[in-house]
Image 1 (cartoon, rainbow, N blue to C red):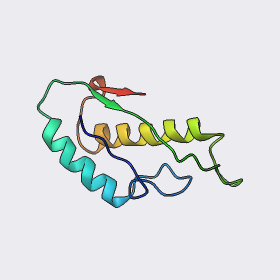
Image 2: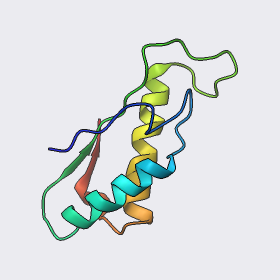
Image 3: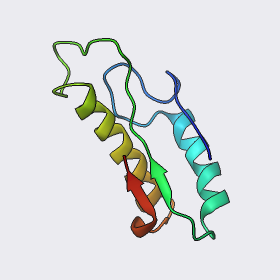
Image 4: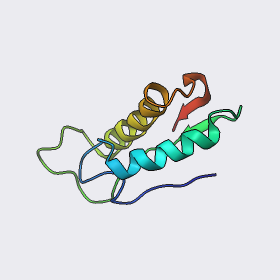
Length: 88
């Protein structure tokens, strides 16, 4: 089990992957690429209210967008099979 989180991963109301997160995902992808295990990507967000300018409806929407972007990165940039990834 690998757990990641905190402001170094995402900023504010953003689902954009920050450089440090990509670096960490690169390392994780190298470790799991040749394994058969499923990879569960859980979204998260701050308990702070979203800004009025946020493109996301609510914290759940932001959490999903973050998890989806992590999954897309693992699939598109790192070659992890989409069949192995579960979003939650």
